[in-house]
Each structure stands twice: as C-alpha cells, then as structure tokens.
Image (cartoon, rainbow, N blue to C red; front, side):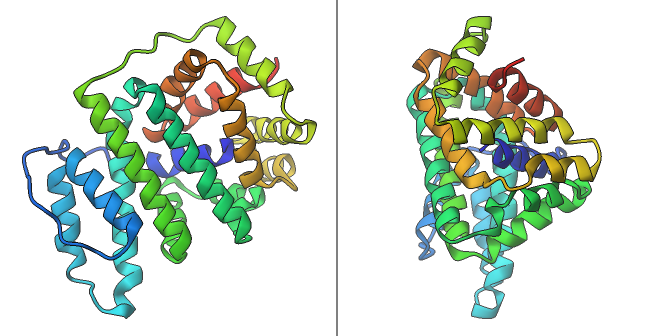
Length: 277
C-alpha cells in the first residue's frame, strides 16, 4: 500500500489547484448509470460537491455510445481524482470507523488486482510511472484504470467511501491529536510482529521511498521483485494490529499528505513511522 499511496500522491500532485471550491448548493437527483461503483461515486460526489456531480453527469451524456465508453470512464476518473484532492483538507478529521472502511476498500481492491495478475502489482511498473513528469503521471494512471472494468469500478467505489467520510468530517470533525514518539514505537513493534516476508517487503519499499527522487536505476533496484498488492495487504494488517488511537493519528497525518499531492512529505512520514532508524 505504501507504493500505492505514493503513486496516488504523485497523481494528485498533478491536479490543478486553481478551481472552484466544492459546492453544496445543488440538490438534484442524478439518473441511474448502471455501474455500482459509478452509482456510489456519483451519490457521494453529489453530497460532497453537488455542482461537480451535475457537471460530470452532463458531460457523460455526450459520450453515450459503446465506442465512447473509454472517454466517459476517463473523464469520470479525472473528476474522482480532483474530488480526492478537494477532500484532503478534511482527512485529518475523519472518524475512526471511516479510516478503517477506507483501508478495507484498499485491501479489497489490491486483492482484486492481485487475483487478476494486474501489472499494477509490479513495483517496477510503479517505478516507471514515478519516473514520468508530473503532467504525465495522472493520464498514465487514469488510462490503465479506465481500460480495466474491475479496477475502474473498485476505484470509484473506494473514492465514494473517502468522499462520504470527508463529507461527514466536514460536517462534524473529529480531532485525533498530534503523533507522538510512542506512536512510532508501537507502529514499528506491530511491523516486527508481521510475517518475516511481509516485513521484508516493507523494508524494500522503504528503500524505494529513499530512492524516489534519485536515479531511476536506484528505484528499479530497490523494488525489484516486490508485489505491491501483497505489500499493501500487509500494511492493512499492520494497521489493524495497532491501538485505534495510534492508528487514527497515523492516518490523520498520512492521508492528507497523500491526497493533497505532497509526495515528499508523504514519503517522509512513511519512512519516519514505519521503518526502524
């Protein structure tokens, strides 16, 4: 999941920040779309930013023929990525149960990708994307998920879960407090209790995060042989093994950094929290 979050943060860094604030003024019922993930996403987007939901649906009406489906999916994922960026400001104040729902959806999605033999479970593939310019990361990531019906539906459903949590946090924020030195100790102790193979994967991804921003060869060497999907599932297991208050403080700091596109800070937090000095 660490590499997955890093890629997400890179993609969100490419989202323009020059856009209107989310609107809650439009209250219209959106027509059915037929896709469970799209339905969930549109409903959550309507609650979070109703004007954006209406714009997306109106835009999709232009691409109704089967051969235009890839365009419609691409535009929908563009809107989803922008909504995640908009939601970042509320992520420190999400309630504990919603943090777990977000992680559970990540675990489910990584399981789907792993079962399908997706190339996105390959860390070298992630390294190739990371090497792209900021302006190329987002189109590259979106294009892959837009072409994969299973990945597309899961990604929209996961985004819906995040937007629902952000909408609740905007209305009734929860404050988890600042991270402590004891939090770091407990995270690292939980990591050492993982299966040895899982922890070695995590250490390899730590090397990847150190290599990010250095040479492409260093990144490729750091992640050689890593199954990102399996490592991500190990991360979720680690999260479940933490005391809830510790887990909340970790996610309250990490997720906003990821979803606001602050890649360097997200990688700093990953190294600082999860890996032994």
